[in-house]
Length: 322
Length: 254
Image 1 (cartoon, chains in turn brown, yellow):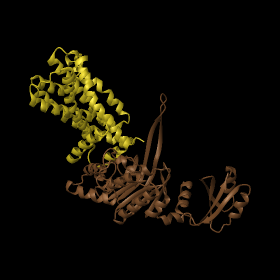
Image 2 (cartoon, rainbow over the protein chains, first blue to last red):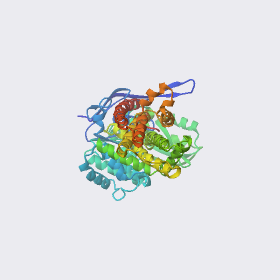
Image 3 (cartoon, helix red, strand yellow):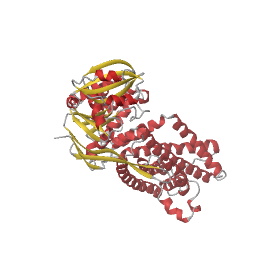
Image 4 (tube, rainbow over the protein chains, first blue to last red):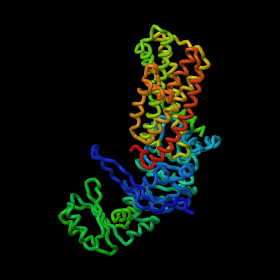
């Protein structure tokens, strides 16, 4: 039986603008989303900023009420049975907020252990083992305000696991971490999944989703545009070839002209230092390189690379077509 | 729930004690309030009235500390991102917010002692307590009742991001209406029923009656009754306001 079941979920926000002539603006953050998560699964929500990932997590962690539709976590309704859900899930978000900075890590963990009703006789051992797991043993009596961002994030993970939750929600947990810190955190997440924990992870890092998640839902403008394994999603662009062309000072009109070349399916532009890198998706077997370079004859070009599509290419394709 | 409340009180006091700005205020304010008691009320030539005025000033300070603790702590929780996390915990929000208010009131208990001590030291306020036992019970009863009144105020801070300013604005009317600045008998008659509903009225009367050797126990009893009433009202408001905040999506500041 699924531990998370979401059916036709919508969530909108109302905001007011103006002082004398007040207007109410309604923003649709989620538009009829449906999905389910099985026990022990590591499920990823992948999408650009403002796509609705965090709103989705907040509805599932009972911090936001759905506007319409239904969401059940561990067979409890998020709207009416929040109290039953809260003790059985853990919620960790990225960044360095969410901790009592002037207190020590130990005080933070003790307080949240009490809030999550960890029995006093188990509390000390549980905190000890979690401090070991997140490698903060020996630093637990220092004030959190003296911690690095990576240490704070690891403390967040320990806090989220205090009551041994059945489902762990991780909202962009590696955001702002240095590469080493992010890799260590991914190893921790992977270890938790190996230990049988159900995890819902939001991220906009493709390699993170690719490396960790069994299934991924790509969300854009509040709707799911694709759901499947990383391989399933890559198959969306499986019949594509990616051509990367480094250019310098390419005008927008020329990019538009390149899009009309037969065989070109889409073109993305990434700025890397002084260069604008064209990411051209074309059908496998279509020889478009010669045509592209012919059009670019008046533009300074650098490296030209042809490669297989990645999850990122699939993501870009899916989000653009949403 | 009890361990969460006790740990919450301890940690919120600890957290407040580590802010040098807050700490300096707690040291300086009693001097200011002792000065208000002896000069503004001009009671220097009547020793018992001077003691009474000092007690009034100390309860004024207690109320201010509760307001600042409850509104400031919740605003801080929003800023540091812990408000969402405590709401997401299975412990009822009342057990999270009440310790913040009680911690403020406990600092207020110290403020009563500090105001009286500074008054005695600087302005020769005669600190003679006629009923020490009743005074010893009356001070924590007053602190509890004032703290629980802060709980009702704190409920609004869950709902409104700018409620800190509303909280600060309640300081002065409460000082006047509850007879801390001037006797209630001097206020218009329509104000009296309002003063009966507010804890500082009874808390001040309890410790004043105990200090002056009158009959403090009915007032102490009223402090406990009002504490229970405030707890029920504050708890109900928190449940309702948490639901509204989940609906509006206003738990997070940014």
